[in-house]
Length: 270
Length: 325
Picture (spheres, rainbow over the protein chains, first blue to last red):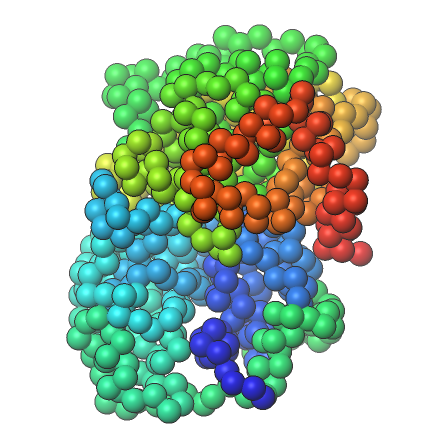
């Protein structure tokens, strides 16, 4: 296998966090790619939901969607509904994972995709929340995947578009966000989670060959360090092949529902 | 927060949208017209809700007709907004954008004209969450002043919009009270409609049903005008009844260069050309785009024809490949 790119590393690491027989509400880009890899490796019964109102998409290799609201995103879907409806499924509690990228994330997992600078007169006006605010507020466990750089990992975000643990402790619950918890943050350097009491971001695992010092250097705030840091296994040849086929084809077309799914449904989830 | 809605609510005037709906005539007549005639219903200062999402089933024939009218001080809302927002901004039509996301699509980066206006304070962007936009239209469609939700709580979006919380009278649970949105005009593109305005779409529905039901005036463009009998043959596919529709515009390829589910894919080459020009020449590029593609043709059909038969055939093939076999 040729050199692994940061994107491949992040998507494959993140894909391993998704358990089989679960439902993931995925944002476009890396979250969708990671979910699609999981579905072709360790989680064949993972149901991918997209905010365009798409349930159970399978994606056509080499024709990945740019938007969660286009025909390519709906390829092989089991159900199409409207946008508001899909978020109401999330609010009802059907979605095990919410899966997001982040332009800027802080030590409490708050995400900014709105503005660099002040909202009133921004230095850069970013596109905005889209469904991210809803996904982080309403899904059972939220996963974040993003590149590890100081400009992304900041002490305080300029603007809380999508609320993580707000100012830590029980502040998220006090704001009325009684649903959802932040599970993990996956980067090209590390796997992180949130320490249960302070809700501050904590280093849990390192990508192969990466040191704690390197992670600290790329993080714009004081990171908590877990007592037992695991070394993450590098992407396997099989995972890389699957990822690259998704990207480029060849279109070895996948059936929308795995062949054994019928048996699994009657047997109940594992 | 949208001050108009808030003040109206506090003054007990929120049922205005209901009163307008009750007062409107609902004749079952032939409502077919042109895009130019239909969009003449839009007045300066109106709130116009644009259906579809990002580059899917955007009512582009209606958007182009509205651009031609050069209205002023419009507010435009959408589930997710694409570069049509930039065309409204560049032609001086738009004061305010109400949506959850403005861009063109991830590969094209940030929308340059949008940034130019919003960063200078020349246009306002009220950023709601995606679900909040959906609930705003849904509350409008349901005829209630707000809907409770568990989203947007604790965020700076809620703070900048002055979004009010509400405590459940039964459980005490804290919720966000998402205010209704009743646009003056809704623009919707559909797969088919009959002359009375019974409307059907294929594939995903975006927020179009709620947008239309919330609005005071509803303009629908359709790929195909079919007979009432054909609509009645598949009544469960009808998303809007005739009495919720004011004008019907025949518009083949009416979402081009955006996609229309099952019929044609998006024309990314067209996007590439626009974005490259906008990044290099800024505002002037957006104005040239409107001159060439909107003003440069007698009508939308002329713009579509300029794309060429080969390109349209290729986009149709793209769509067919993605449909269930």
